[in-house]
Image 1: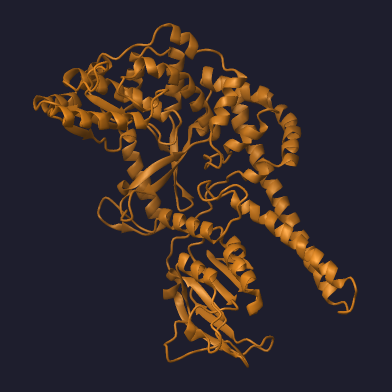
Image 2: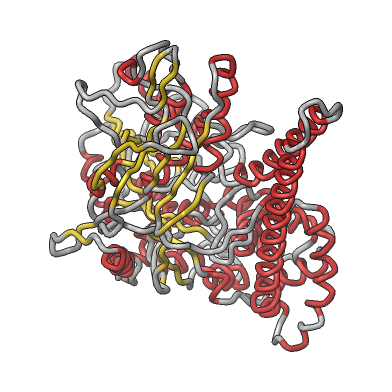
Length: 616
């Protein structure tokens, strides 16, 4: 049994008892108990009758230990709140075979300072001693916020809900006449109704499961009141227990949808391993303090959130770039697209192209601010194909993209274990699924043209090339220099915050220099005038204008970054001597994969050329 009280997770345990049920007890600690802890709370108490011990000092008879419970306590970093001296041994259950301390209370370490006292008392309703723990709950801790609504993937794949959605969709279509365009109708009407539908269905599913569970327990209680010699009593009890197990497994499956795919394989049950992984991930992302620009630590949630918001406002403010430098980079010698490409890039959106963009999106990804996952589009595309095609056509061709659709959610991932300032965190933007589908459509149209405009040394985002080709080129260059006894210096360039340091003025000027169509440029420029909110510990900040950078998390970001970096690769290749590894290959001085650039320096004068090219 589990409950929440003022941010504290309370879990009451009664494990299977008896040496003959040891295997069942291990399954209970490894599979069943973790289901009550899927939310990975930061403040938690687990107490009850564990029917086993973890230390030999806790028993006088047989040492009945549980390896699964030991792994659970160690993995969650819990402490035994009794903490008695070795000479003061306390037992809560005594029999002829010996005495044991079966009843214990474990807690997270942040509750140790709140402990006022602990004792055992006699209880008339059991042959165990009751353990009483007194703690205070007024300590200053970071309390997680509610975050924002996220679609339940299991419900999105429910057949009955999909049918209900199609029926509701007909009613929602009647409100289109009140909106200026279909995109506005999708954003203001449909998304809201989808959220309400899923919330209602989820609430009803939980209520039905709770009522069914109470019904089964009531039936079991009635059966237990029958005389023991009743001939059908045992069969009926076993049948009801099987019903409860099946109901529990169905409820437990809802908890699996939040576990990332690398941790959970298909048809695998959520276990202690997944619980510990989720808790470590939650602890890593929970920010308890942050240092502000004045060197003072902010520990309140308001101070932490404001500190991150101010830092990101400065980070994504407009970046001043010299116009002369932009002109030199725009005329660095890179290729322009042939006019025939404009017709290809501006072709009408088809259902097959939309279908490919939706299917290309991975499953079980964190949704954006609207909470709608990509699974919703995958499962409902066939029934809503006409409206979806019309919505994305307006988004692509007419740039009818609302500000809320472009709004992202920034989550901050620590770069190391010693993160103390906002700059020690890596901002990742969670984007709405419809925004990402549009970005995948644009990226799918640009990708074939990258072969024509990108430098031959760029291996990222180009069809037919991969990072292994870049590594093999560097390896062959070093082998050739060693064999030919030729001078060679392998220089690696590292760009600090590469994606965040892209000026929008530079981005749009460079894209125009490639000869992309005006319609495509307007679409890219429109999606790069967004706002974002910061999501810290379940709390959300106000909107932050994004006036620079390429969003990490956008499907279009890698292609855009490669196009922005391309003029630098041409300038470097034109000024450096390079190395010819094979007779049929061109002389090469640059090997690049996204923002990782490796230079092959053969003469000392090339160092000055590199400095000049970087300084533009």
